[in-house]
Every structure is written in structure tokens, then in C-alpha cells.
Length: 197
Image 1 (cartoon, rainbow, N blue to C red):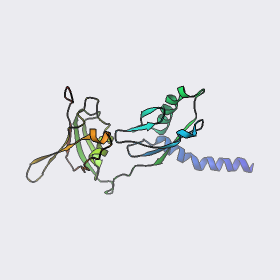
Image 2: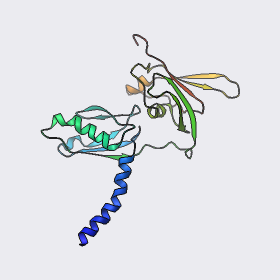
Image 3: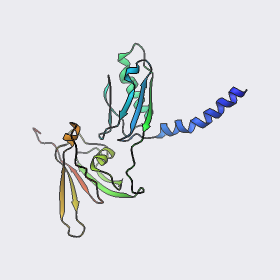
């Protein structure tokens, strides 16, 4: 009886944690912990990249941002299956949540247009960088000119428009990006790739 009661108490205490993880939507900057019971050499931390993907050994790139932990676990498990005699047991959990990017949760409107998955107006937390915004907005299409992304910022007093260039291709290749912190009303333009670009 004591063991049954203890089991029920533990289940009641851990259920909210499991529910919270199942209802959590993964975002860029999160770190996932993966364990594969049948092959511990695959156990590792997986950083969700700015484009929303994770890189899994023996699998390659898996889309993670915007999905639940369980759906990403299932995708990894399915992709690993051909490498095992029977379906592998994969555990996936949130190891670290991406920082929110502080200012007490105040949001500002930012606009994105061109070769992006979700064009339009998006409210972001003050202090959000362009790279974080690109990840939040759903990413770029395959036709995006990733070397020629622009941030257009209008000075409210003078009406003058300043244009800042951003080379996302360099970031994809492991380079550093200018840390452009977005301001209210910024317009991000992602042009279409030229023929031989």
C-alpha cells in the first residue's frame, strides 16, 4: 500500500513537468538533450540554430523550432531507424531554454517582406537581434538572397531611411554577423536570389 501511495504522489508531482515539456514549443537558441539507449555514442546536447534546425549525427539536419519535443523526438527516432535492427529508443528533453532577451517583456513591431516563410508584421521583445528575429519569423525560403538581407530603419525625426546590410550566408558558413538590434518599425527586406548568385 505504501509503495502504491508513494507511486501516486510521485506521478502527481512529475505530471506537470511532463505536460509542460509536451506543450512547450521549441525555439532557436534552446538546447536539447538527446539520449539513444542502443548507442550511447549518439548522446549529446543539440543547439537549435537560428534557422530553426538541429544537427543530429547519423541523421543530418532536423527541423526543430516551432515544434514540440515529442514531434522532434519522433522525427529523430524515425530517421535513425534504418541504422538499427529494431527501432531505437530515443529520449529528448529541453536541456536549456533560450534567453528571452530582456526589457521586461516589452514588445515592438517589426516588419519582414520578401523571400521569407511568414512575411508581415511581427511583435518581438525589445532587444531582439536580426538573427533572432529571422529564426522567430519562420526562416527564409530557398530563393532568398542570403548575402543581401537589409534592415531599413526610418529616423522618426528626420524621415531619413538608413539601410543596414546583413550577410546571413556568412553566418551559415560559421562566420560572425553584425549584431543588429532591431528597433520599432524596422523593415527587414529579403530579396530574391539572382540567377547565378
